Length: 118
Length: 114
Image (cartoon, rainbow over all chains, first blue to last red):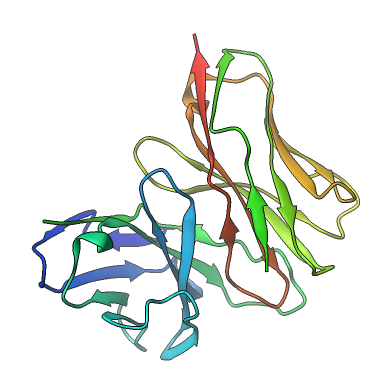
């Protein structure tokens, strides 16, 4: 059973370019989360998606960042017109269909995409 | 708002000794979950252990156990019989029930000395 797959592992972009980060959740998982990790810091929540729906985007910057999780295919985190401050590790996590009574809803993480903006 | 505090930026421990990584949390909710993740130098985030706020017993998973003290709002991770492969960053995180986002602490870098 494959884990959460993220690609690419490393991505280098010049200022002003677009970055597209992909995440395939674990088999049977319908919930996807994106987090950002700056150097020497913990992960910060960005967005929570279910298939074709954004559920919570309270951690997403208001501009240049967008996320989707289409009916078919991976979830995509898109960063337009990247700036040096976007350099970070971006992690995707997935969890199974959430049982509202089950507090133990473990989020399983991918290996991350390390974005470097030159 | 939730907050996780990990006060130990780095720790050095002799191989085969037990180690305790501290974590305190703050939340106004009565129902929540606490999680520990390990991040080795390769960068991935590995789930280790979970504790629910209503669980009466401390969680255990192999060599990992969680020392949960609800009144003190602490959820320390205990690793028994440490191994060289335990060298990594360790993050404490929490989630309120009814909310999907995890809030992470700043982590503790654990180094096991042979």
